[in-house]
Length: 114
Length: 114
DNA sequence: CAGATATTTCGATAATAATCGAAATATAGC
DNA sequence: GCTATATTTCGATTATTATCGAAATATCTG
Image (cartoon, rainbow over all chains, first blue to last red; front, side, top):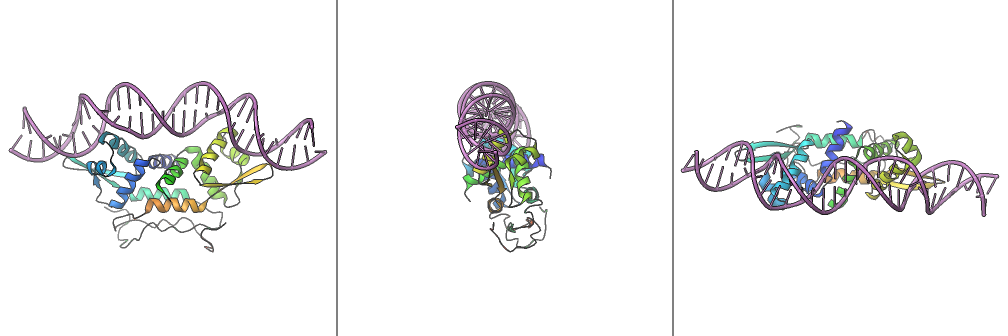
């Protein structure tokens, strides 16, 4: 992941609505959520939400797919992991640094899946 | 870590110079670097750098200490870990999700140290 | 095709951020 | 106290971002 892409990803996340939106998708899992459902969950007008979705999408943090009239958005876990990895790269001049396991990872069957 | 603090941290990192600056400090380790040394390393005017240092400091991502005439800045590894943890909280509706080990963690003696 | 639903694009406005030189503050040494 | 070094604060300018209603686009159903 290049520095420029990382800045775009961080900029995308550095906004209250988008951070909440991204976390909502992270927690929703690979199935994702329709734009309308997100707008309702966050209490944001559709046009505003669309702007924020575009930011996250442009940053490569979320994926979009169509299902009938609805557009379904889902978190891109691979991009998130790459982002975290970049921040920690070559970290800690040999000292401290906690592991920070991302999640329970019950199955771990697939890594870039769905 | 609260949502508002996370947004501040992400905003602080979502800027080319500050991202480079933070990574410089992350890689420099707990000893940190003097403001002047950072300015030279990044090729940024002192007043501009001061602005960026203030942003990172205000976001709680870096610590400041004085050594004679110099102000030494160092990365706050605890804050970084908390930030990453927040992003992954409750992630992956039970599916995927790669571990993303932050660093080699040779010793692993302390977790929130220095 | 007409009408309904889901979402995006457009356009205008308001707020926030980045930039850097010049002047101000803090510490050190004589 | 004076002079030099290290860094920050101030102020003015420019650029980017967030906001949301209204209109446009896409898909579905009959």
